[in-house]
Image 1 (spheres, rainbow, N blue to C red):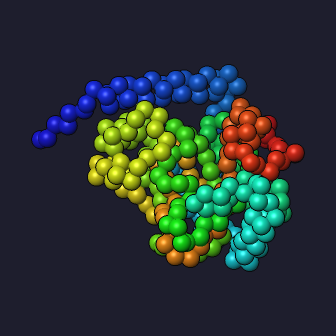
Image 2: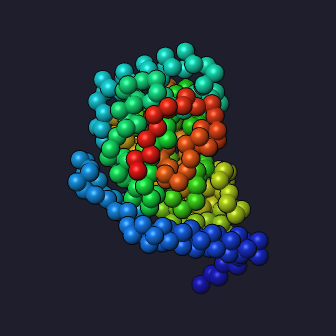
Image 3: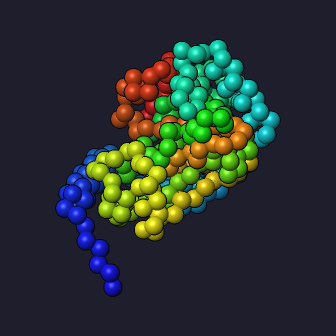
Length: 282
């Protein structure tokens, strides 16, 4: 039996992570005790069939045919028009994206206001949550770019997003990739050593992901038709695979606990088209 020796540097990172996790769990228990409520899925508020345990364990759920092809086509047009009309609000990196596109498009607002996702966000975040804004994204081939700028996690332990493919996505035009279970504390701790990660490291290099995969966590690549929704805990390690041909359109809802101030989030993600009637769903 081969014994793996962990370097002191990673032992310190592991200890820091465990302490952060215990503080996080304690704060959750305090909130739940204070308001005398545990956030579970209320099936009366959801009209779709999902395996909520998969979200908890693997960190994502795929729902096919959530929007029709016609609805996806209309939103693709809205995204193209918005990028053209609002260049000052367009983030232009490896992809083009507009935060707050729900304020510009009625079709995008329907996705933003989805009550199923809002209910599930409470379960994932363990707190009353709201959709701060919807991101409209357009990724084109030619620069070997990817959505999100490579492998990363958005947070540690819990954060929730709802994404929809607005175009058919295959292996070559930027499919969403995720390391299932990488948000869970045991895998998080294990990856610090196996992937040579730093404490609270958000951006992760390809070679580090390969090391993590060699230790047991294998990526899932989501190839699906337009209209497919991916609900995921964005504390997982994930990315948009680099695009080699074609293009990809998506909408992504960003959900935060009501304790996160909307104006602070706008400042963090600026430029953002602000929603003057933001609902915290209290």
